[in-house]
Image (cartoon, rainbow, N blue to C red; front, side, top):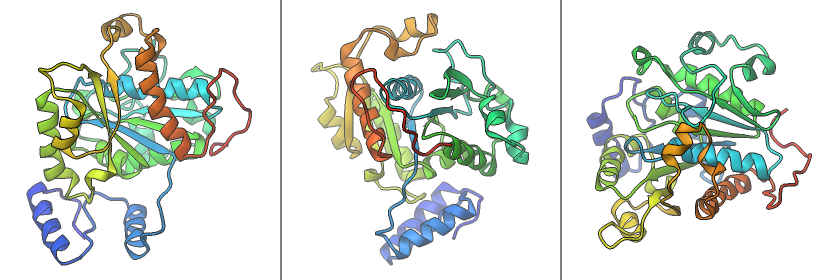
Length: 313
């Protein structure tokens, strides 16, 4: 078991040595509950981890991770009866450009997270921007540049655990920075992890660097992620979805066709799914259905919702 002092090159080498000898490495920066869970899964691989947390992340910025996460949240709100919490846990960006945001931000509640001072569900929900009562709640990310690397694993673990208790589905946008507790805890505590890329060679190359230096030492395999190719264009001068899949070896769940509403959604403060783009909607529905199926919540194609609740109180 490695200490909490993260040294990427050391972890990568130690992981390779352990793998060659069938030794399970317990990586750094885990909560004690996660260490126990990792040991249990190593002893009994058939014991599958189930969680109602789903993470969206990327290898570079400005590829549409936040817009994809928010759009999936809104589709789930419209087509299920789940109570959905969206955590915009990007330590470098508050992520609220597409919303007329009225809630607290991650930096606002840091002291509450640090002292684990949230006493009730109503107090917790008061930190969120409520899109629809008992249906969709959004928490803005960090606005304070001085705090970008100061969030601890205990604070983020506490936030995610409270969210798991209160919401049926928790969606997390954790951005593209891998040198902080926000990203590591978000990935560790989620059931499905959606890697959002585009057709830039930089996005593909950077993911391979990150996988080798960070994700592999943390114990992840390529099959632990699902790839979403955003703003996809079927052009001969751009890599195809098959070529991207071959380059990064991550299973693809969908390719989201390029649309024209990205800048407009920020100007009008409307989530991207609100615009009448059927191809975009179809791709977002694919992601939303995979999430609802994972937590055994019915995805209703019409507008009617069932009244039954699942995980939340």
